[in-house]
Length: 595
Image (tube, rainbow, N blue to C red; front, side, top):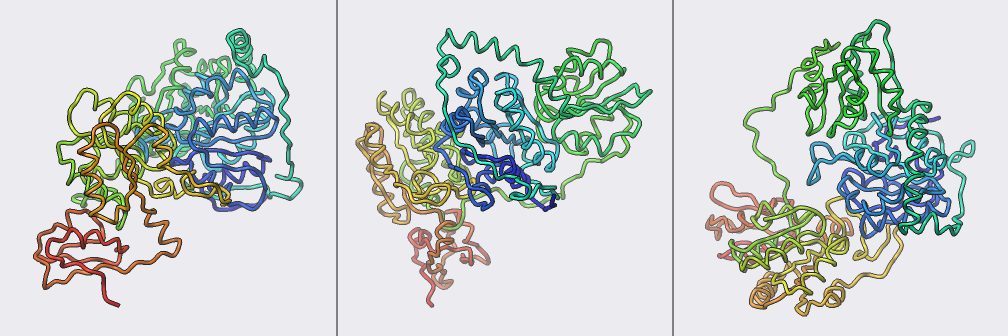
């Protein structure tokens, strides 16, 4: 056993190697991305790893591998689980032969997400296991439990770390891979044909569903035997606290020594065990993040025991829990905590720091051209990615989920005569944008679709995608032609431009505006960060203060490398040399610096 200081996602990935993982697939999404990133970079164990084109594809790849008897992993963030919900809901029916772990990283407070969502509900809906770690060490250890648990019951296991688990660091006790046989077992897949198990036509489905229902009680009882759901009963205590996930860690910090405490680390919950614990007390406080999953189970078995939690306002439904919020919940429930925490007031009058596009990002030039050509009255549906930050430039009017920019835009186009300009990234287009484009062409939408092609999945950490030309393991793969795909979808107007060529960008946008039907503009320029990492260097721009008239046209462009001081613009070392500001300047006061 060794101890290392690790990020939660790194500890999870290491545990997968300890557990003899054979197959991993996923789609990047914060806060889950580092798991696959770590697995594809590690040298401890050789196995198959891929970034898939979307979450449904990734899930089905991993499920297929698990049907052959190997151990597989699927990774996603919570909203990605929605994309994979179709196969998820049937995977409990078909079951698995090899261990199958579904890692869905939830994001309370929506740090980098379009909603807050509780994946535990999906596990209950699908009738599968759910493991809910309370800290980084437990996240590691639960992976080692998840694979044999999945194989024993032939059921997928949903593993639900949250942002605070994924992106916290901690000392983690690890089993050394290669020592005493740890992580050295390799399985060979062998798919055994069994249509009654894997072909879910109605006649088979009805039988499989009954079998899944019959497993539930044994599944719940086994989780208690494993100690994943456990209780510390204090004799004479009339009050108890029940908590799950990271909330259990917060509760431990303030719980009085003489008070009973139950931790729910896994689902389904054994109702007899839960009723026995709850029935010993007069009052129970339930502390959990997001949905009242535990609380609803507690209320069903509570009898005369008073239950406090979300449903009576003691615990908030939204956002992350903190020590301050848990302390407040104790107070509302009339429980004296060991320690109290007053809310921390933010420092007054701090300047806002909204997230913005990087200096030199090609997306900014595209947004500038869109606004200039199509006008402020146009509707700008957008999508999930770096380009969502175009909201700061007034060119993002809608964002809801992956691939929705094209479909929302085409829907609006059929009932509103305004110009519609949808923006979507290359990875997102390949993820779920293609069906929307086919539908828009097929049904005669009138809109412009701008594919912002930066050759990478940038916002989640620069993971490759089918448009990048390399796989997750760095192997060369065929580069996808976005132009050919768009034409195959039926689009007849397909133009590719370099967003650093502002004149061509404006001309192409004007041409699209004057053309009826579905028009596709592919704005191709590699991500500026990826380009710098690859060694690409451009000369910085500089402002001639004697020519600058202080009109702020360059400042309004929104590049963080441009500053304005003492009635004159200046360009900082953040400049990547894209040159767009020089083309915008009405007095030609900006030029490449002289070396």
